[in-house]
Length: 178
Image 1: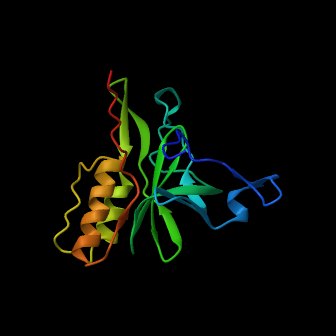
Image 2: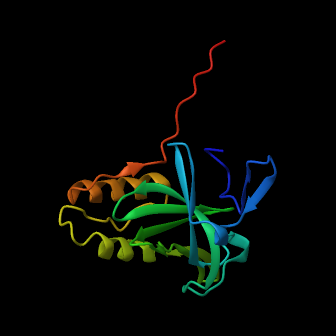
């Protein structure tokens, strides 16, 4: 349960009578799994464009859809990093109860009769704006859209602004001895 391959669409708990009760994102604000992870319920707008190479379009603009989902908290601070894990990872930043997708939009272009995959890295400028209060943080043009790169940046911002950040992403190493 700590490292689900996808964010759950619902959760189930037993009530005091031992009956299984199902909760969907619209019915609860958040749930926790001990001190290891937090999932927050939010109505999100996300880029619904396909990320599969065979289904990319020539449109470099994202196409947004809305959905109520559970988001896993990776870095919990004034500016939080959250993720919605489906077939792909969709990263969000949260502040004051509002979440916004950090948009990475893949698309195709045709140059000299060759299809070339490109990425509209909207998230780079979003992050520069989010972290503008901290002059020591530089968001590189080539910042990777992945959990480690983004969480490192959110942790640096929390440290720069003197905030405490709670980290929920670290996986524990498992040692198998024979």
